[in-house]
View (cartoon, rainbow, N blue to C red):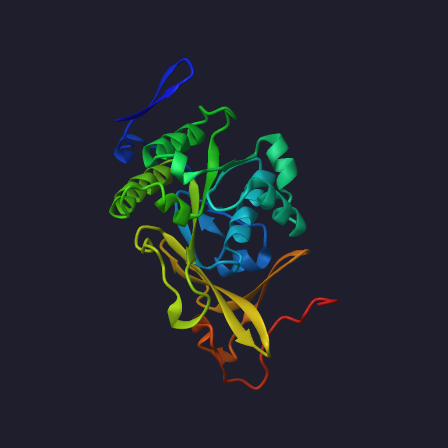
Length: 283
């Protein structure tokens, strides 16, 4: 058992046993509020499931995750975001510039954002923190329905050995799933394109859904692509679509049917007229 000396006594962090925690929740999807993204997911992310956002840095993983949190807040549901790799002020500024209303949701208590220093937090403490957030016994007092860990790279740094991450994460995701929570995890791959991309640890088999992000080159420009490669319960589109993140919000383009090899980052043009979103004015 892990504990910490705190003001007024000891703060104890008991081991999380997922099988001891069950809750009833509706069989429904959590929509993102973005028509293109929800179409790609054939409705949204099912309640009680975990989703991995996998791709290189800067491809839009955190932005898409924040979009889901903001959509939940608009429905009156609380989201809890744990930021390992980014300063909170940077997170707020970036979200505002991309048209995601984080500030009002933070003020209302429907979105809580906590910056986490992995050097100061053990995995046991983090699991207890999530339990208090999900059951509403934390300072906010409102149970969270969406939990975002951004990113697992940072969470991995709190582990004494990477071998422990799989066991801890399995128990944590099982608990959150049995509480009906939609859990979003981001993993940043090293490298940008091609065969030089590597993942610090493979967690794709632990999660229910996997959304893949990629850079690719076309017409002398660096583009982004998004695709759903796994959705354990329910249908999803098998297409690869262009992703644009602009001040007007998230834009999902038409399927990239005129290209092959987009997921490698070096696509080959095979069509008569490439379907790519037009550049916004001034770009």
